[in-house]
Amino acid sequence: MLPEAESWVEHNVNLEGPLAGIPVWLKDTIAVGGFDVSVGYSCNTGKPYPKDGSLVRLLKDAGRFCHTTECINGLRLCILGAVPYVKTNLPVTLLSFESTNDVWGRCTNPHNSEFSPGGSTGGESALLAFGGGRIGIGSDVAGSVRVPAHFSGIYSLRCSTGRWPKMGMNTSMPGQEGIPSVFSPMARTMGDLAYFTRSLISMRPWKYDHTVHPIEWREDHEQDAKGKGSFRVGVMRTDGKKPTILFVFRKANHPRCRRTVACLLKSLTTSRERSSIPRARGRRRLSSATLRRSRYCLSTPQC
Image (tube, rainbow, N blue to C red; front, side, top):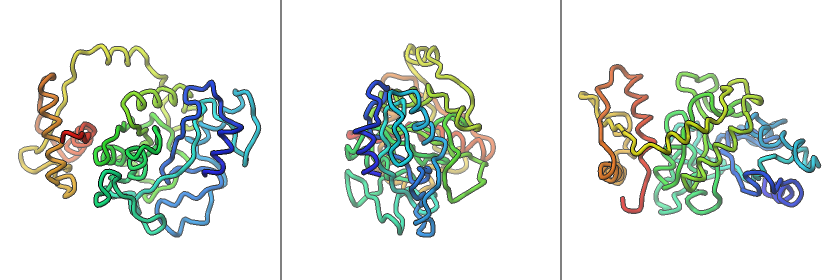
């Protein structure tokens, strides 16, 4: 995608857009017309998708509102001004906390090449942590943007189901809707994360994908959240009978990961009230509480 991206930058970037000229990379599950969506499988190579998925169309079809509608390889300018330029690595089947496959090879942690950058959106987290850009788009079912953020030391947001487009993609689990996948942003800073999410929602993605809820960006809610003096964060290590899912996984149970959680909790308790999640009833509540909690496990240099 690099030659196409260079052409977009030279001829088709809206320098008045909120994301003017910012390079954006995409997880290799997102359909871009003319390119493969491998999901790490060799059987998916050499089979370029004929058209863009809804998320990519959102970024391209808005070109008719910009100063030019000149086409390059059939792709038009995005009103946001962002430049998709690369697709990033992931594990075969997506169901792993690493990002290795036989098509693209092994993706390593930029802080230490002997460690994983996380998964399944590990290519995104590695590129962000390495300084290759500022914004990426991944997907998350059970931690696929949150775990890489933790492993690589960047920021991510697992958006609510139905908030971002998801049609026009490839997966190893078609039809799996028990815990729906959600495409979500990843960034180097919290400010970038909020700005990118706000900009994308302002494009009204429900006009491109019927699975997206027609909910505008609620500025009043954002300001109310910023005005709160403190937030209550719940942490559940056990339901009284067994460890939670996060602490059962061997990699998540690594001493460094446990030390990171302990360090974060200690930092939070200095300025915020600490609370514990009540005993969960049933696997579904246990899994949901664990997934909500894992978004706070961000890696820091002090940990």
